[in-house]
Amino acid sequence: MSKLLEIRNLSAAYGQIEVIHGLNLEVNQGEIVALIGSNGAGKSTLLRTISGLMRPTAGEVIFQGKCINDLKTNEIVKSGLIHVPEGRAILKRMTIEDNLLTGAVFRSKKEIQEDLEEAFRLFPILKERRKQLAGTLSGGQQQMLAIARGLMARPSLLMLDEPSLGLAPLVIKDIFRLIQELKTKGITILIVEQNARQTLRISDRAYVLETGHIALSGNSGELLKNDVILKAYLGEN
Ligand code: ATP
Image (cartoon, rainbow, N blue to C red):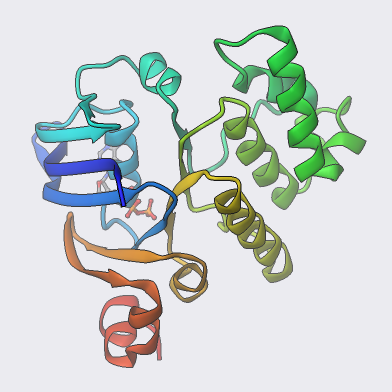
């Protein structure tokens, strides 16, 4: 399996306070990799550091074999690494279609049109409501829009930060099903979640993050079978 993303000895800080401490992680082409752990463990900070929103204080982010530490965020997006942040960050006063178009960068009109069609195929509800303001969508639909906008940039690696946050169980099921469908389309996924059990069910491998370092990692199926681990690290009974 070829490595798509490799994190080497990465540290990150807010001012003087280091919150990621020399972390190592990798994502292979075609995998769904989960990053789980409790509140404040540093999951969102790690994604921000990978996508260039924050600069690491030490270590390297290697994407497609190249160190991207010094690239600008738009260059990172152009290289195919897309971050769908926590809280979705959709533009509520713009229409659904315009939100999607903001995700389409660096391509011809024809390609953008094709991608829009594909987004509407994956998310029929967005097609139905494409002329409406994004703020009128339900929470689950807004999350779908955020993911669809990420797809408009034709990612090779899609990083999703807590896509299930605040959603009803049935909607979470839909989102997770969709994430599995993206994998079959050849998109590699790094997903941050607090919803550990469900995330382990759809991922190939997982890392458990604890106060800025990896507490353990392994095959998701095996982690899911290990009650001791689920209790100790994921606070489950
Ligand atoms: P959550 O699910 O709550 O977002 P997380 O695992 O994603 O948790 P982070 O948000 O990355 O964790 O936070 C890691 C640590 O960094 C926490 O101690 C948090 O208080 C701190 N932190 C996060 N954002 C900032 C910020 N903008 N300024 C200062 N400290 C921050």
